[in-house]
Structure formats: C-alpha cells, structure tokens
Image: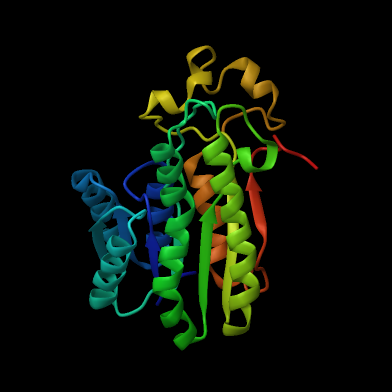
Amino acid sequence: MKLAGRTAFVTGASRNIGRAIALAFAAEGADLVLNTRANREELETVADECRKHGVRVVSVLGDIGDPEAVENMVKGGLAVLGAIDVLVCNAAIRPHKSVTETSLEEWHRVFAVNLHSAFYLARAMVPGMKARGRGSIIALGGQSSITGRSGTAAVTAAKTGLLGLVRALAAELGPSGIRVNMVVPGTIDTERRYAEWYPEFRQAPPGGPEQLKRIPLGRLGRPEEIAEACLFLASDASAYITGDTIRVMGGSVIG
C-alpha cells in the first residue's frame, strides 16, 4: 500500500474532490484527519467510508480561514494519530463577482480560505514533519490562476498567491525532506452547490458541447482523477518532485 504507516490531513473532505482524495488515501492505507467547515453529517459519512479500509479517521469541524481553529484541529488530529505526514489543502471558495462588486469583506474572506489557510496549516504541521525528516504538502490550485478569468479577481489572485507559497515552501523545506507541490484541476464533474459561484453555467451547463470543444480530451474530469494526482504526490513515487505543478485539465491549457 502506497501510504501505509502515514497520516494525511485533508481539508474540504466532505464531498467532491476532497471526498475522492480521502477515499483514495484510505484505500492506500493512510490514517486520516478529515476537515470540513460545518456539515458534520456529510463529513462523518465520508469518514465511515474510509474506515471500511481499516484505517483510523479523525473528523474535525472548523474554519480553515481562522488560524486559531486550524491550530486546534491540528492538535486534535495529532492527539489521536500522533503525526501528520501529508497535508492536502483542498477547501476553497469561488465567488464570481466583478472587482467593483466585490466587497472588502468578500476579498479578505477569499484570501483567508484559499491562501492564508495553507500558511496556517503548514505552520502548524511543518515542525512535526521536520522532526521526522519527511512530509508532503499538496495544494489544489485553480485554472484561473493560469489563464485569468473575468469576474474572479479575488479567487485568481488568491490561487496565484498559493502557487507562490508552494514554490517558496518547496525551496525552504526541501532540505528537511518535505516536498511541496500543486495540483491544478480543470473542469471537473462535481456537485456545484453554490450556483452563484458559476454564473457561466446558467447559459451553458458544464459538460455541454461548447465547453467540451475547448477540452482536447473531450470530456469533464472526474474527482477520482484529481485524487490520483494527489496520491502520486503524497507517495514515494514522487520522491524527487517538489515545487512543481500537475495540471489535471484534459489538455484545456496546453503550452
């Protein structure tokens, strides 16, 4: 098993890509700390699915944009499982608004969840990773940080900043045996619970002919395909990869 004897902390684990990552890691033997902000029932359903693989799972509710909450969640996971070897920064919010319609509160909230949280989480976990001489930090990026996208100033800026954080941490932590990388999903076939985040889909739902024409592989991605990329980066199969990006985008951005 690729992750036997290791523990992973996955944010936004209650559904979609986060759920797929949790299940993929559990199937490969990882004990887990699973986070979501508020929906305990959904999170516990995922935790129970993971436990079927014989792994230990700790469920933690909390706002990753709150540094005190992050500290408490990490301490809670460590108290039960003893160590955290892999961090997956998956949770994010994606409001679509023009720059003039974005309030200061919304701007700061996007940065708190999409960027600052990765700093809070890394700061809490890196000391233990350094002590063991190993670790893998994986951040989920965004296509808009590669291409730019109208109406996403806050999201694009935060995800671009996240890429900078990945590169800086990779350079800083490499000598301690800690690798830091990014996975960038393309358009993935997920439940989009917040319709206001995806105004473009009001005219053309995801997976429609016009959208698929722009994807060389001709289909939407699956959450499990993002999870496989994260599994690769979490495992020793990627032992010589750090500061890098894997685009799981069906070829929609080539070059």
